[in-house]
Image (cartoon, rainbow, N blue to C red; front, top):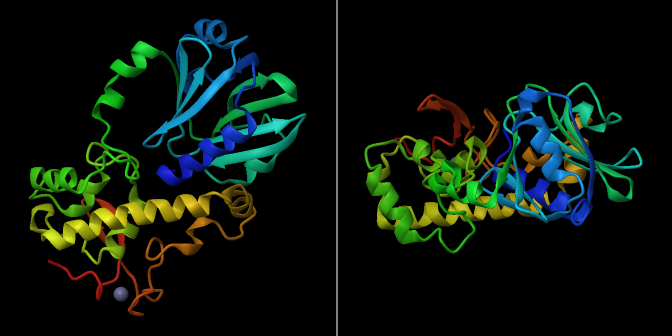
Length: 291
Ligand SMILES: [Zn+2]
């Protein structure tokens, strides 16, 4: 599933390719992908411009120049692809070979024809992704934003706030705590493993057992891992295309994620795979001592 850095990469790709374009027509190929009546969807979008592209956690929010917002959750296999007269300008989300095929394809669920010959396609092989159409009031009042924790790179993700969350969940292993979207937004399995390795903390350590220095290290590691991934994601149109062609992707620079049996980048000990709170986790047994 794409995590914050991947969704941020999609946001930047959309900013560069569709911002300011007017919606000329909308085609809904799968009702399941849409949490809005098809008629309202057409009426509220057609004729309006895409005025902003924001992100909260792993969700994209595209503002129209009206009271409407498109809320896009890519989930497991969602992709957004932008074309101009049939040529791909940007493709982001779940990397797959079909991302490079002519659009629309078998996995296209919703397509938007935009001004200037551009089109935006929402593809989703497994149909877990969703597009919702919300008014400003609905967006603000919805449970999603209300429950979502601070952005890891934002000023509201403070060390003091993070420490109080660790105390709130003090008996839980640290890994599921940082995966909890109400503690910090946008972290999934990849960046949880990467952050814990960077902070030299075992994922089964009870959250409340972290010393002051350790919680500071983890807070910093989360920010570093996310910032570093976004930086590499900045070029990830090429990465995604390469991944779709079976070449290197953004995981190339991962420290531990999916690196079982390979040497730890710090100490050379082979990376191990364990299960923590039902999730597969990669650790260095030397750098990340078990509790
Ligand atoms: Zn190590």
